[in-house]
Length: 377
Image 1: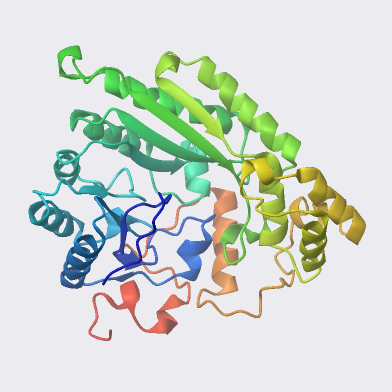
Image 2 (image 1 turned 120 degrees about the horizontal axis):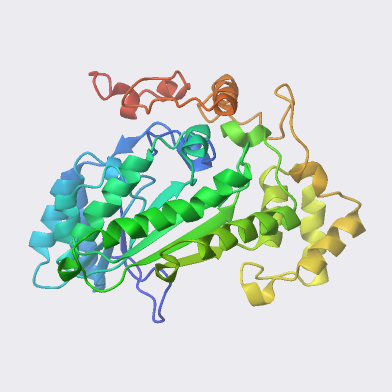
C-alpha cells in the first residue's frame, strides 16, 4: 500500500491505520456509533502488514490507529508493541485517538510516550455523572480521575478533555461540572510529589454545542438558540475562573452560529436544499474557514426562501413523527432508538454490546460483535 503523499503540509500529516469499524458503546448523541454497527475488528496480522507497507511507502513519521473507540480493539497492546519494536530505530510517533479514559492501559501508554511525548485526548463528553448517564457514556468520575492519574504518572503533562454543551436535560449545575471536573483532573496531577513531576500540567477543555443527528436516540431532541449556547459557554468559562488550579486550565468552545446551521441541515428535509442554493448564490463558499463564514448571508438565504430555521432546530419532535430519513434502513431499528431516548430521559445506562445485547437490530447483518462468541461469522 502506497498512499498518495502531498507536496504541501497537510492537516493529517500521518499514516492512518483503521483498526476496526463500529463501536460497542452506544453513546446516544453519536450517529457514527449507530449507523456503523456492528463493531468489526480487523485482523491484527493484516494491520501489521498495512502499517509496515504504508510507513515504508510514505516516509511519514507518525501513524494514527483510527477507530471510533481505539481502546476497545482487543489486540491494541499487541499492535502497539509491534509498531514500537518494528520502527524503534525510526522514531515513529504512535497516535491513539478516540481513547476511553477507563480502558487505556498504563503499560501501553508508557511504551508509546517513550517514543515521543504529545498530549493525550479524552472525551468525558459531560461534566456531571448525571449527564454522562443521560448520554450513556458509561464513565464514572473515578474512571476519569484514575485514568488521568495513570497518564500523569506515566510522564504526560498535557491532557485535552472534550465536552458537549446543550445536551438534553442539561442544567446549570451540569454545565459548571465541566470546569470542576477539569480542575479535579489538574488536582490529580499536583498530588504527584513535586520531585516526580515534569513542571506544570496543562488541561485544555473544549466544548462543542449539541446537534441532534438522525439515526440516534437524540434525533427527537430540540436544540438551543445561538444566544443560549453562548450563554452556556459563558457559564462554564466563569466557573473555570473560580477553580483552584485555573492557571493550569484552558477552555475553548465552538462557534454557536455554525452549530445552528449544522442543526438545520443535520435534520433538514428537501426544502433546505433551496437554502443551500440561495446561500451559494449570495456568496457563501468555504464556510468551514472562519474568515469565510458569513452568518448574515445564511440568514438572508433563509429569509429569501421563506424557510424558518427554528422549525428544524428549536422544535421538539414527538415520538410518532415521520422523519425525512425514515425510509433508510441502517440495521438499527427506530424502536430501539425510541427505547434509548426514553432511557435517556430517565438517566438509565444501557450496557455496551459486549456486556449484553440490547436488541438494536444490527445482528441482522450476520457478523461483527453480535457473533463474536458464535461460529456464525
